[in-house]
Image (cartoon, rainbow, N blue to C red; front, side, top):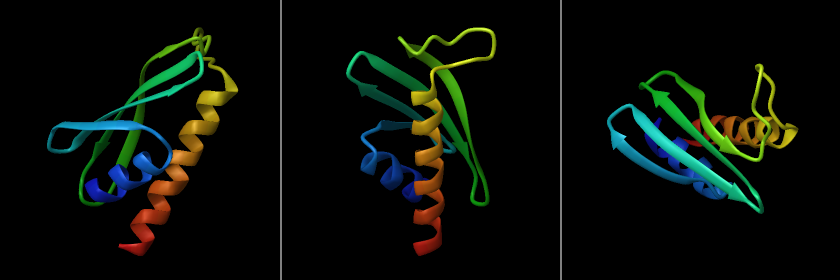
Length: 85
């Protein structure tokens, strides 16, 4: 699982670190936008959680469409990596 997440993130330009087992900290910077997420994982599942962002207008449960697209693409790529491992 860890390898699939790291490969998928790197392919999409995410900067990823693994501060502890089961946790990956990821940041993406595109032009004036940035997103910071945490991916918690086990051997059978993972979840992507929003931590912080810049210029993505995150408020009242809403956020810029760029963020949603970045997360959807990352999620799709993780699933692709899992299917080939």
